[in-house]
Image (tube, rainbow, N blue to C red; front, side, top):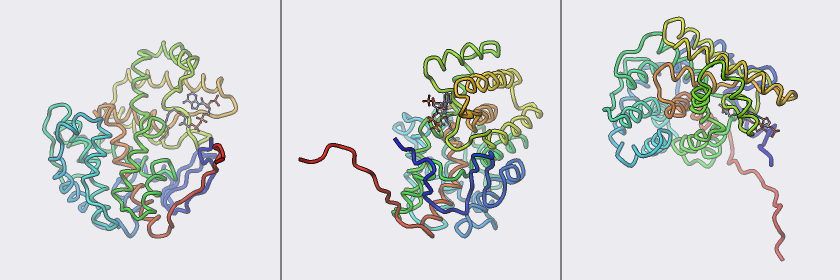
Length: 355
Ligand code: ACO
C-alpha cells in the first residue's frame, strides 16, 4: 500500500530534505549553519516569517511561556494518568484556536512549558514557573530541574530544538497542513501534528533507543543482541529513514552537540561507549541484511542520548521533540493558510462492487 513516496503535496519555502545527498536546508540555511550557531528563537523567526517576525521574538516568547504556564493549573489526576505525550496533547487542546500571531506565539511557547511541568507533576513535584529572561532552551531546562542550567546544557538542548525545528513534509507536518487547509485554526493543526508525532515510526522512537541500549547492557553484547532482534523480524530503533538514503544530517548535528556536552563533563562516558558500539554493530548488521538499501543512523538515535544526558525521562522525549518541531508545524500551517487550498486527495476503490 502506498506511503505517498515521491508524491509532491505542497510547495514550500520552509525546508528542503535532500535525501540523496544527506542535506537539510531550513529557510535557505543548511542545518550545519544553524545547529550549534543559532538559537531556536532565531530559527523560529526564520520559519515564522510575517507570522512570528524575528524582532523581539525572544522576549515575546518569554512572555508567552508565562501565559502558557497558567494552563499548567489544569493538570489533574486525569491528565497525570496519561502518558506525557497524551498529557501534552490534552494541555495544548486547552489553548484557544485561531490563525493570528498571538495564537501562534502561545502555541510555539507552550510545549516547552507543559513538558517539564508534566514530568515534575508525574514525579510528585510542583511545576516550576518560567523565567521570561532566559533563552527558550535554558528556561525549558530550568523548569525541568529547578536550577539554572549550565551554558553547555542549554546549548545542547538549543542545538536539539534547532535540529528538529523543521523537516519537509514529514507525517506530523503533513497532518498539520491538512488540518490548517480546512481553516480549523493553528491549535487544531498542532494537535493533529502531535497525534502523528506520537507514533513509534515517527517521533516515538528515541525512548525505545534507550530501551535497546539498556537491553544490550555492555558493548561486548551488541552484536549478539542486535542479531537476535533482527532474526526475530524486529526493527532496530534509531536506524533507517524514508527519505535519507545516506546518513541523516541531523544525526551528525546531534552527535556534535553530544560531543560538546561530553567534553564539558555532561555525558556519562560508559553510556557513550555503549552507544558507539551499538551504532557500529547495527550499521554492520543492517548493511548485511539490506545491502541495496542504505539503512543509516537517524536523528532519533542521538536524540535519545542528548535528551537522556540533559535529564529528561525517556517518556518525555516525544514531547521535547514537539517543543522543537512546533516551529515547523506553525510555519507550515501558516504557509498552507496563506498560499494553499483545501487538501483533498483521491482514493481508488478496490473493494467489492455493489450488486
Ligand atoms: N531495522 C531493521 N530493518 C529495517 C529498519 C530498521 N530500523 N528500517 C527499515 N528496515 C527494513 C524493513 O524491515 C524493510 O525490509 P523488507 O523490505 O524486507 O520488509 C526495509 O528495510 C524497508 O523498510 P520500510 O518500512 O519500507 O522503510 P520505510 O522507509 O517505510 O521506513 C522507518 C522508515 C519507518 C523510519 C524505518 O526505517 C523504521 O521502522 N526505523 C525504526 C524506527 C525509527 O527509528 N523511527 C524514527 C525515524 S526518524 C523520525 O521519524 C524523525
